[in-house]
Length: 112
Image (tube, rainbow, N blue to C red):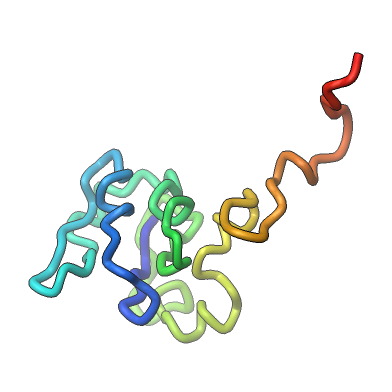
């Protein structure tokens, strides 16, 4: 479930708004995305995966985190490296290794 949109990291690109399949976000008067319909979040991680500045944190739960929990504390989650963690794990973003390249087991090499 989407828990954090960091105003400090957000560059107002609106990508999270565009990729969200359930229309969770609205833009505030300053053009920043805000969680307007959090209960509609499907925990698909698309917003976090596409955010170019790792400004989002999606908790891996189907229900909202309890108010005041670690999952809603931006400073704590930033120190833990949780903002954009899903994006990092799948290897999206400049300088990151795609998750498929890290997979163990059979790999297609392109040679026959």
